[in-house]
Length: 305
Length: 293
Image (cartoon, rainbow over all chains, first blue to last red; front, top):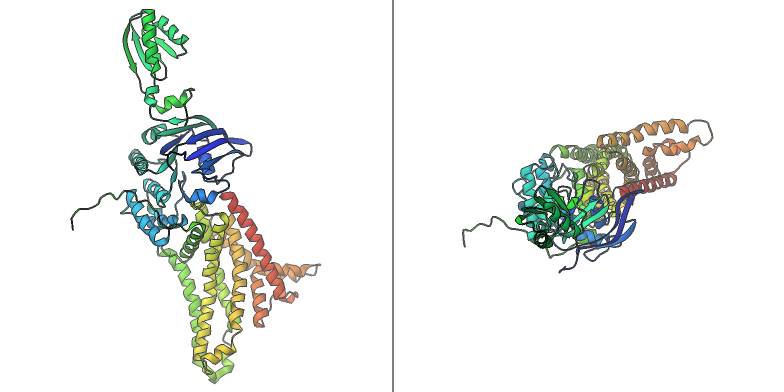
């Protein structure tokens, strides 16, 4: 793929009989591990199903690895691995049989499918349990099998829908480690989650959806430099706040302490200039790191590719 | 040689052959056969299908044994032993009970356990999926009907006093009549089993509904068809379980008569109704699964 975008979406709208699930989205998703973030009902699963060509957009369109999923769905699906959010495992098959079967569904010949099934189950930590029936698996083990079936055929793009759903803290940590490893293997991944910390831990790019609208799309790297700056002055805190507000910055004042931003590194320069101009005397200036949740709740724009 | 051990093999990419949608359909077909026969499943899931198969083949073996035992010394006795056509009466009950299990088991778990979401994320269309499932169904159920008949045919040939080849030559018509009759049974029962299984989410209920439509239905339709109101005779065609038997009678000229035959309908009419049932089932099942995909 080189540096081409994995997914390119233009003016995409999808509704379910009058209920708009996605509204006029235009964005690009680069190679790497991307987080698709939003509350339940934000349109994440709808977007994944559109990428797979299982839904038809009401308006607009997209390309996935250079193919249009509406006109070439089988070409797209042959190169995608999909881990659904809900239950998708037959209780009456062993893990090894099921994963080998899903590899064959993706076009891998049977003998190679069996070999890759064993290797993939080894990778997700189920080498000992691979001949047990799936109906006997715990939730955590089932999530690993779901991940294994999604990667067994060496997809170019992996779609994970709430991969840590239903897992206990230890299971969640292990699942996130696995996803990070997939990124290290140069597998392009789109992780859908409503848990922002999961995205922070695993992704290099984030797409935020809110009730079908695109909130943000951009890199996660550098988010910490977009946090707020905590400032303490010797005197005239209100005057400093007023001068900073005049420069278009958000400022809250608590005595001699100010919180400025969030924003980029230009905040520090502005604080230096305005405290000097006001003669307020700068005691302390510390940048706090921004969490993904802060950014999700802030209306500021991020740049896309 | 070293004594080093690889603890983490990482992830191996795959650059080999990919068989595409045809390979996906083959995989569904093979997995369908394995599921119906309980292969790769727990032991309890193998019991029912293999008992049915054993009974079907066992019946053929018993008929051969009876023929061998009475031999040519008592040909009049041999007339009491079921012929090829009459054996369908026995096999059709086994087939009916097998299909009541196989149809729901083939379709419903994929749907209710959410596995379709994985299948249709692969290069597999709804039509490809259903075609492969029908293929698996026809292969297994067809074998339930055909294998005992083949065993019977070869067995009777081997014990024939006229010699194997002479027996085969004298009974060439069996080679097409048996498969055609088998197709009629598999098509009629299969269409109904697939239709019910596509809309009912519990295999047990689907099995009961299948048997409930066919077994009481044959008696109800037969009773109504004998009524005196105009067009009553057409209801004989709603005794779906009788329709393949009408075709069987037409082909083998057996003496058993069914309400449809009494009402004046022959093999071609029965074949047309079976064909219509298959088309109706295909349309509704396809509609159902396209909504699910």
